[in-house]
Length: 413
View 1 (cartoon, helix red, strand yellow):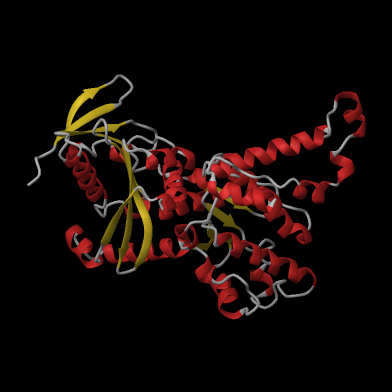
View 2 (spheres, rainbow, N blue to C red):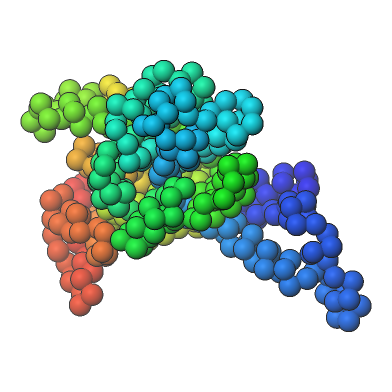
């Protein structure tokens, strides 16, 4: 297995599955059939084939960067035992022994998941002051305020709150997973927000951590690899809140100047393939063509002399956002195949720098024009007139709404 894992690190289209995990969990007697072996040289039982199918599906989803982004978790009888409004901040069940240890370990598992790039959001029907007291006064809390992208405690419905949270994070509701011990709350969210994943909750607190790590994480948060952007994801969203507060007191140009934006564009960086794949799979709003590429696809682009993969890294006075914008340029045709920007930096004009770099590369290839394309989707209406605003002119429009644009490239000095 170590040798296979080492080979997989050098071959991006190879994924290694450890079947010992299945045998340890379900037992050899349930997964291996001597009768099937002697009848048809079939080693495994039907149950094993079902488990293999699900394991392979999860691995392929992780390789294609299809994991969800946000884990919304209830508080009372979920993050801790008991109802804080009744027992107070020190009366909740949370400790290093017995049932309290179950909740402490559950919080440790959630904190570990956060470090893979999952945004944690606390959502509770509670008085906000009661929840604040837990974070302020209960020293047994493993998770701290800074571990959460948002904390919402009020008496609105969970479905209404989740829509507001999606708006605040500028993320699609289909990137959410909701954990709550109350079956009525789960049913409400599942009914009114069917895009949200709502897994069944375990009946015993002793099973919380295993359920989270064995069932929830592999199903919704599988990762092919952890990037630097993943590790800093919560801090990035919290910094965005500070940026929004500052933006309220500036005009746009003044705001951008005050941010002190610094951008760097990297071309064909093989160590950025995982992040690039994440962006093509997940970015919807500011994505001109919404073409989805996995790591293997992007590796071919990077190694091709006829393409260039541009990654833009961003930082400002509030911190480093990492790689937030991407363009794939077909150098042979002088065409922008893909142009996208993370929703975290929408409105900060970083996409203009990618266009300038794409033009520079196409000019070096001898092109006198650069071609852009807009393919409409349900989610990218925000950029329907993007090329119109960036010096391109329409060249063709198709019945399905797809548009081709062109922009002249001035000769270099």
